[in-house]
Image (cartoon, rainbow, N blue to C red; front, top):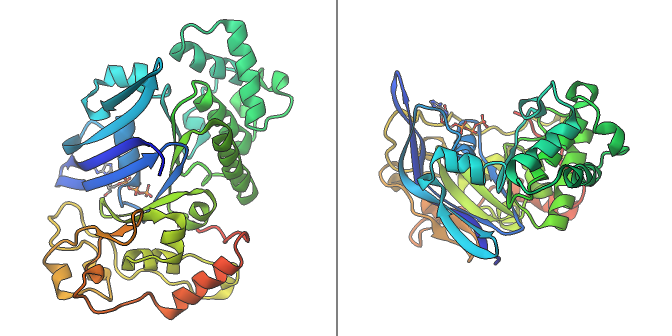
Length: 363
Ligand SMILES: Nc1ncnc2c1ncn2[C@@H]1O[C@H](COP(=O)(O)OP(=O)(O)OP(=O)(O)O)[C@@H](O)[C@H]1O
């Protein structure tokens, strides 16, 4: 296993609201490895965005970090540095980390672009702000190089364009170029293709993979689209109600999932033939995070729940060195419950058809 770039340990975050404290992240542990892609998946409200915003330290003012650390390991002038991002001031985050070493691509490219500035200027600005030593001519050459890297033809001409002169897919490419301008160690992608049409989505995903192969950047992908996960991820973390309930390599999560919630997510993902089939949806809805959760947060929705699930939270059981799941079904005394035959058959089918893209799931 490669080096750990980011390590989140025992993270707990609440938000103060007029109804009380929302316990959005309830003890989260997660590692990102150098040069690898980690996909964080889960239903809406499971805490994916809050997790990555905590890394960037861009949570809203009503946030309260109750405990935990986010250790970032990187090279600074040839020296290995290990810092807890939660201990840095906002100013330090802005000047040394955000955009410089950890960059984020959002769903809507316009949130990251300045409509009144040419794209060339925006890419160069990013380099000049963060790497003061760069000369303008050097920055110009590097901007051209980055536009080529993200697949933009005729970059000299494009440098003079304003964002509104580009298509949605092109804008997202430009955002990626801006984010790469400072050679960050980590790129966080928050549903970066959701706003784009399906063919453009595939191209952007391909692009991020190509860039990763060239630059060995580490990528965190947050999405509720398992089709995207199958295409981009090396590792997958499944989130439910502010916790990681299963994590493993992409193969382990797709072909040997252990948590009933992961079974549910995989079952609700359409394959190419299920166009006219009624898709499975996980019964019930996620818990209200304003209230204290007894036992396993997924228990009320889990048809395989055991008595203990309603009383005691399951620990992370080890399946392999890379695969862990928080379900009492993995306890040695638990009854033997496997994923349904239908899901097994579907997964087998998809494995056989590997390479054929699963239809995009959008919820
Ligand atoms: N500023 C805030 N104030 C109060 N609650 C918040 C705030 N931000 C997030 N939350 C709550 O934290 C929980 C996790 O939200 P988060 O946005 O991380 O979910 P998500 O998994 O990213 O969902 P989606 O896929 O819809 O983006 C939700 O219950 C949400 O309502």
